[in-house]
Image: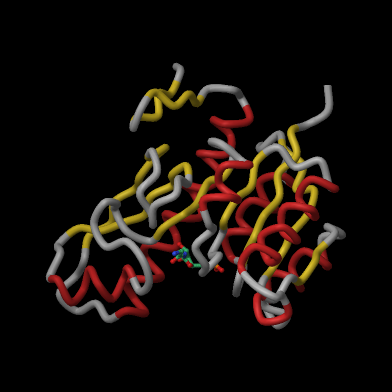
Length: 203
Ligand code: GAR
């Protein structure tokens, strides 16, 4: 049986994409990254996918007439590559309800905080400014809200008194690189089901 196909959407550096690629290459994550799409033509994620021989595309919001056209283009590329699950790995835009309705429980996101704390942009800075002592990362299914969908898994890290955004982000990122492949492995094994707000993980 062939591996499940995922599509990754990334806006920047792509270290989470790399974490997935490394696990796939190591043979410990039974998935195929069928396509990578970025909304930024200079995203390093594109370079990473090219190096790995993964088809990659740029869809810039500014080149589209509106959000609908932008999302239709994304949708078209993902479908043309047989994608079953869309992985948002550092994608810095909100997908609209039309897109989400077309991919029910088929979009997952990684967020650099323990949701529902610190949704949206600059989650690490939010945690620091708030004075949180613990933060972390969350992998969740995406719904119509902003970072509100059912939680698949979370990993916590301490906030040290000496932290700035850079040191805290780096500590969280190390956990992201474990959490996202772990969540994908559970999905690939068919172990995730969504019941209301909750994700049930089969043993
Ligand atoms: C990661 O920290 C990810 O959690 C965050 O962007 C970074 C992307 O890093 N995503 C969000 O904030 C989404 N709202 P990467 O490009 O190296 O994977």
